[in-house]
Length: 98
Image 1 (cartoon, helix red, strand yellow):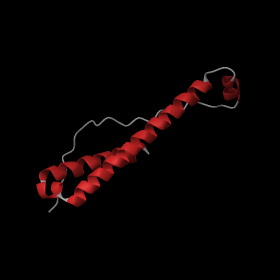
Image 2: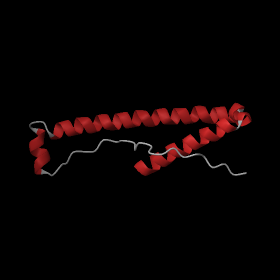
Image 3: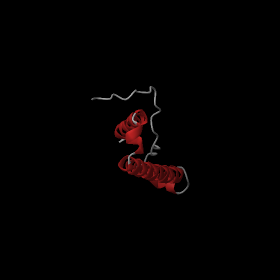
């Protein structure tokens, strides 16, 4: 879901901002491992988004191509929407609780 992905991105940004404020945390082996894992997850998500958008492009092209457009129109197929992340409109400062 788009809202969940945007919330996840905001949370990640906040986590990294907090780490910048605490050098001991930033240097921790556990935090570095977490950071590497988060980078890997983000790369996998980017790959999935590109794959999905490629599939949508092929599907939409088929809907507009002869002879598949005849079948698509007859059965009410409609173009799919590309996956797009919302642009960050405002940077949020992380809230640090003691």
